[in-house]
Length: 127
Image (cartoon, rainbow, N blue to C red; front, side, top):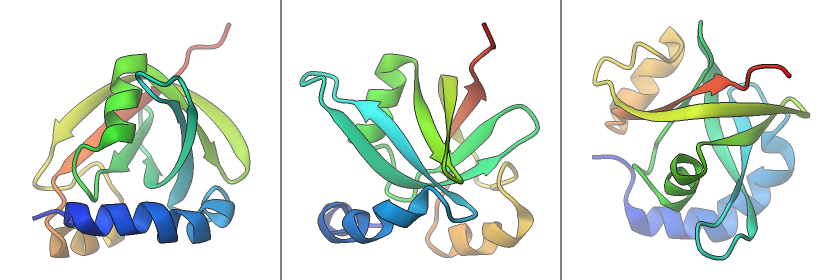
């Protein structure tokens, strides 16, 4: 049971507006900059994101939502982490009930809300 969709809608209106300005600077958070699949409009979505050995992983606390589908369709995105943009590519959904791709202290929190879906992204190759 990931967090309910209704809460996601409320969070999009209230939480994202409050967290948005600081999420790109807080540890464990970032801002995914993506474009709508149909509208082409730019969106900025605060997420829980963590560095891994080969890239980054985003905990999908609300499951696969619009922003996730936008990133998958585009083949990547820009994520602002600690105030700097990072170009990421090769998005892939991973079902991971063990939550091994996130830091150990975060696992119990994600387990408490039954998060088992993650989006893995690789750094865009230079050049």
